[in-house]
Length: 64
Ligand SMILES: [Zn+2]
Image (cartoon, rainbow, N blue to C red; front, side, top):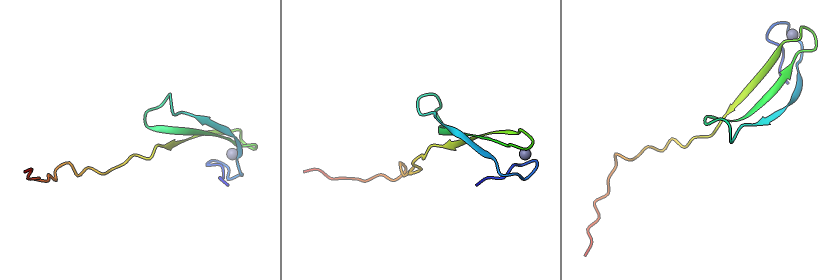
């Protein structure tokens, strides 16, 4: 699990929120809260973006 940034106590999972339709760069947010110092965390999970940019490579096909 995740420990609190401030006091080191194990934080409590509050739930996940689907961001697929709201955020362009993130697909999910996770709410975490610390039971000791009441710190609140939201973790944003980035979407998996395909980084295959081989557009510079051109194939010269000869058609008959
Ligand atoms: Zn804490």
